[in-house]
Image (tube, rainbow, N blue to C red; front, side, top):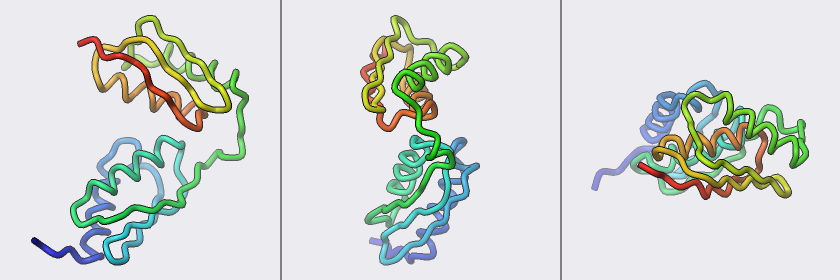
Length: 146
């Protein structure tokens, strides 16, 4: 088993984050101590924070990921109705996702998505759009109909 130095892990996490089309544009500071990765900085959305955490956790040698990432617009709190309307608008304008019989509901900032999509990429894209619209969490019940 190869032992990874903290510096090597930090470089690999940094490279992995830069390669991601959404996270690559964010300014994220990475500190590694004993294989534990600490992420800090400003990100565009809550989804970006989840994505950064997931990417970092998949790097070989990482034993734990901790994050103090904050969204740039965290002070801009939306009502459930505003979040729901924004999600539906984002779906309507998104050429990369087609949701059949889409239904969006938001309660206490938690968005619930139902309907069907054509592939897993559209399913993930729909969740990202919900986070970008201001959802604190997304319950994604979309079905993939390949």
